Image (cartoon, rainbow, N blue to C red; front, side, top):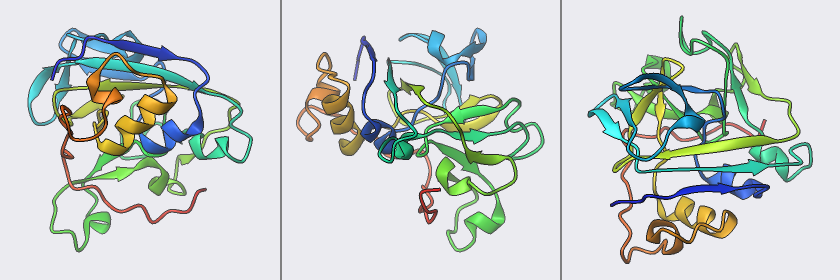
Length: 210
């Protein structure tokens, strides 16, 4: 799968943030050339992954969600993960992510009954833990990073996921962001599209829309 496209579509609706995983500008990603702001990454840049060493980015995209204080937009309001909220030094700085963005957890309490030693958990499911809350903002820019497969990457020194290409989020982006240059987004059915399996088991989200 090779995508050499960068999408920048302003003022897209909240359904994208509800469907896909996103970082926000200023988030530092560990790459082969050091830590870089997520918005500066381009196809070909190599980011550190937990499972496969340094892997090349194959697509980046971004969109803007406005009017987040309205009822519909509230679903796209980012989650604030304060420094040290996940563990000492994790993350190193405050960071904002989309509600469905998933972090790697090794917390035995969260993994109880799963048979897994680590898994992915959505940011929205972490709301209420110390240092984790809904952000207060009118608008937000969300940024996606895609690799050849779903990866776990270092963001602000915390392991979290890359964009995962699934049928649902490919359709959401194709419809809302007008992404037509790549068959991965314009054709979200199985024909010609390589969908990605999750890098880890994904814990069910039992949180309310806080």
